[in-house]
Length: 197
Image (tube, rainbow, N blue to C red; front, side, top):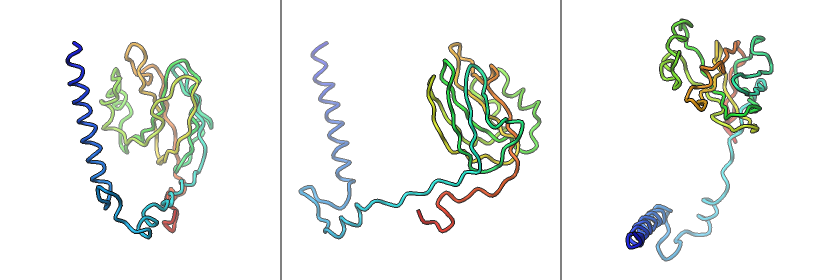
């Protein structure tokens, strides 16, 4: 067994060397012996680029996740405003959780959507009925995070598709809810009106 290890190590070393050579070759206008760029070129290529500004938010949405429910503040029945929303997600449960948002497409029959999603832990059966918006993909017990989500007008599903130890998505165990999102002001351009960062 030991005689095969050096060959494997040499093989991996060759791959790393090839990748390093490729990276150096793609690295810019320098030569193998050094840089052929002037100080002026170096100054323009190494200057930090302006960062895009984050979009202005229209509201903050707090969500606590536990087994198998969301506690939402403000109350989802009171309605939310369309636009960029600061999401404060806190997993107060004992299992990993997520919150993903999907806008229900216009004209979708809710009974048909429910039937398509029933007993489907992947969510694949219901995907044709919704447009995914985003959310927080996965955090462990006791963790918190924030995210920005651009909520669109109309009914929006909030759901957790993390599977339990038996492979059943939490959404099928009751960890989903429908938010009412009313029309709001147009979502601001993330880079700002003038396009400057």
